[in-house]
Image (cartoon, rainbow, N blue to C red; front, side, top):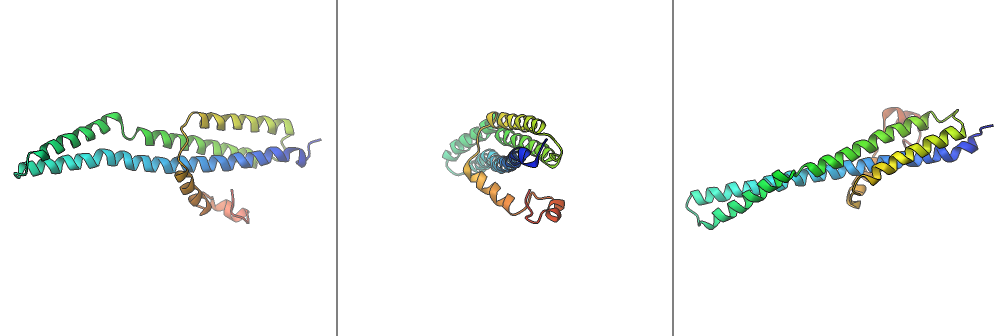
Amino acid sequence: MVTKDSTSPYVAELDRMYEDSTYSAQSYFEAAKSAEFWGRTIVFLPALISSAASILVVIGQTRHWGAVGAVAGAIAATSAFLGSERKSKSLREAGNRFTALRHTIRLERETANGKDKAELEKIVRNLRTDYNSIVAGNELVSNRFSKKADGRIISGTLNHEVDKKDAPSGKR
């Protein structure tokens, strides 16, 4: 006979994985936003400096500005060539994978009632393997982004309206 007590450890693990996936996804999205900003800045700022230095040479300023313009142009070109936005794309893809996993975990959690212990154990183990696979395939993000993610999650940004109505705590 399957009792709620025999399946509760698996349901609790689904809850933990849901929370882990939520925080991981949001942390990667925060890191992607930062990487995109700095990726664009490292191309745009040197290009702007190069343009300004070239104008200074044209209007008769010292030729040293030509060297500044050449170096800044080389930095901008190198950054563009190396794909300054590649990092942000990779981080965003990791966030998307964690989000997709979070949705799957949520579905399994919401439909856990009525499943037997063996079935829940198999589901939990498979989902944990999926989670670990995503973690292993991605570079960890800085704690700074985790703190930003924490703020967004605690503020309720990710909560669905239906959950706010159904759950007194507004969580999940």
